[in-house]
Length: 278
Image 1 (cartoon, helix red, strand yellow):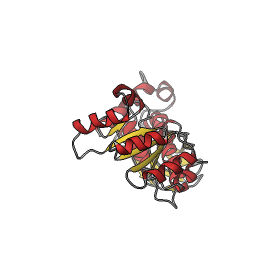
Image 2 (cartoon, helix red, strand yellow; image 1 turned 60 degrees about the vertical axis):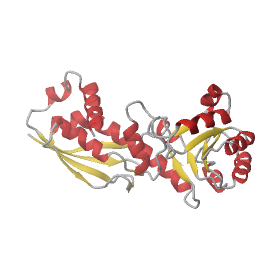
Image 3 (tube, rainbow, N blue to C red; image 1 turned 45 degrees about the vertical axis):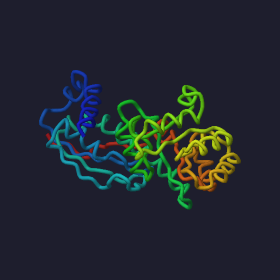
Image 4 (cartoon, rainbow, N blue to C red; image 1 turned 45 degrees about the horizontal axis):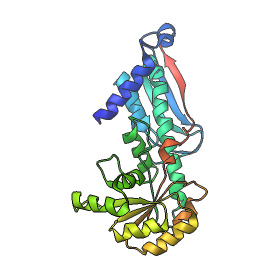
């Protein structure tokens, strides 16, 4: 929570600089305003409490009536929240609050589309560590809000042997041997593979999770058959809304999608002033 508060303060400081000169010149100090935040397209809401935190950081007296909660579907033109308080503070916080809300709702909305595409299968949708620096906590929260699941939060959260680790160790077998001799038994070891030969080597060396990296559909199907439930299967690389359903149909356990956090479009949300009273 302290990290998020600091993030909001940093965003406000970045935008405010020495102050909002437009508001201070145009609006009397004690003017009270009422505004509404509106969805301009259909979205899955994410980050409403972060938007509220922006306004409350500027003025704890601002009241916020939430019409929806994170994770709920909102249609175009529906009111997300109604705000009331010092008008200068409302307008000063508008852009920063909307930046958080549009970005996190964009992630939640895109995640929901992926989750919905595989709803008929056992496969779970995962995020990755391809996040905006400093925003990982919030972006991974938005993935969960959209119905997805979090992969590792950071490097200390799980054992994942990738291609460069394998090169550094001299091969998959060597990397797994080192991992098993230095890892607590409570941690599962995941290995990234790029071919069916590497799948077989990873299984023989004792991998508990096999990540099929950038394999085509035929290779994924062959790998699922080869693994035959001897390990958990994750697919990563080249996953889109157009092919995610076909990948899920092969029977894999997880599909990780970097685009959830690094390429989600900010959705269209606006704040409109309803009244102002000096």
